Amino acid sequence: MGKGQKVIIIGLDGGTLNLMNPWMEEGKLPNFSKIKKKGVYGKLRSTTPCYSAPAWVSISTGVQPGKHGIYDFFPTDSLKKKIINSRYRRTPAIWNVLTDEGKKSIIVNIPGTYPPEKINGVMITGLLTPSEESDFTYPKEVKNNLTKDKLGKYELEQVVVDDIPKGLTAKYAPEKLAEQVNMITISHATVTMNLMQKYEWDLAMVVFRGTDDAQHLLWDRKDLILSCYKKADEYLGKFMEKYPDALFIIVSDHGFGQPEKYVYLNNALYNAGYLKTTSDPARGFNAFVTSMFDTFSKFIFHILPVKKLVRTQIGRKIIQSSGVKSNIDFSKTKALYHSVCSRGIRINLKDKYIEGIVDKKDYTKVRSNLIGFLNNLKDPETGENIVETIYTSEEIYGKNAVNDPLDLIFDLKEGYGAQELIQPVGGMKAFLNWNAGLSIISPPGFYDWVGDHSQYGIIFMYGKNIKAGKKIDASVVDIVPTVLSALGIAIPSYIDGKTLNDAFVKKPKVEIIEKKEKILTKSEFDKIKKFRLILKKNKIKVK
Ligand SMILES: [Zn+2]
Image (cartoon, rainbow, N blue to C red; front, side, top):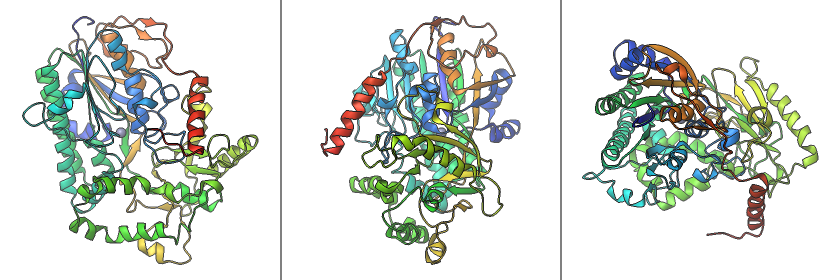
């Protein structure tokens, strides 16, 4: 190890042993089975909340969200629906550490990496890259070579924008969706392999996201989900064959399961008076449009080229400006459920937001009222509590957490998923039912996922110095220190994870080096935020 050692990390978004174990036993995933026998495998604990943005950033930095500052796809320091980018990350990622050490990386399709960073190596950014027109590669020229005859055609996924066509395809042409996500996996695997041929590297890392999409949208079609795992298995085999001396680490950012019911948290906050809207959410225009869309979606899917339309400039604009938060009256709202994948509540503080209404002196009271509200939130069908555990941001992310985490974070009881929309639950029927109000509980409906994340993902490790057939338990923050130790590089002291010594036959020499995160100080960051606020208040736009 150390000198000359190469590491390949393959990410399988949402990979879960609950599905993989039986499939490996039945011989359906031969390459994963091989690693299970000849390498180590086990469960990988995700972040809280267990969603892709914080989890992939923890996998690539070795620290918990309180240090890296990514808690959600949507920045937690803004009430509006913006999307995070790599500049929100406040700790170096493994590719920065390797760059400092003179080692080379090839980094492909990691969520939240746009805009690409200048690294010693090559980077193609992943999910949350704004559009095909943006510069999503480093070096810039790599983008020009993403063609069939050179590095391979690159399929760029676009979160939010692609959600509607993907959801509709899952409903009305599920086989086609599986085919589409598998095409994306092939594209990302091919480009990565071609980059590994063309450029030098010590670390190569690629994330396959097909398993996440398929499990969210096609949970009831295990045959199609299996096809996505098989596609990943097929390419894993190709990588293993081509690089027999590399250390392989296969990880997922979280596991997967099936929510039986969804809790509409903003409906609950609206009913309790914490959240106000600009028009009646049960009867207003938004409610009409969402229930209309639900009713006529099949027709729309079959007659319109939805995927093309949403990707046009105007389509993109409409989608980004609509959505859940367009209907909230922030000047009268005390608290809101931040986003579908935030598992957290934001208190609308006066000091923090232009339209903030909660005084700093009332903060503790409002927060404890909200804790009471969550603790008492009951499923009307069963009378049972819905929320499992509630944490304050300090409890879970520490007192010095960066980038302003949400005020309350919580886990739901098993079997519940969360929804952010404020609307009648149950389509046109609910809309037309004049006295229905806003229910808070529903079986997975038109706007809900049929599958959703769970706390434990997967880890597989395979290589010459890796034990055979051993089970290990690990956390998302353990990947970076393990890779650094394997490459013979000292681990910066701010890293939260530990080297997975149990996986190795000959344990790597683990060195820790005293190092502070390269992050902005609190006062520097506050200055930037204050500046942003002044610009906003005076409606000044910065180009
Ligand atoms: Zn994910």
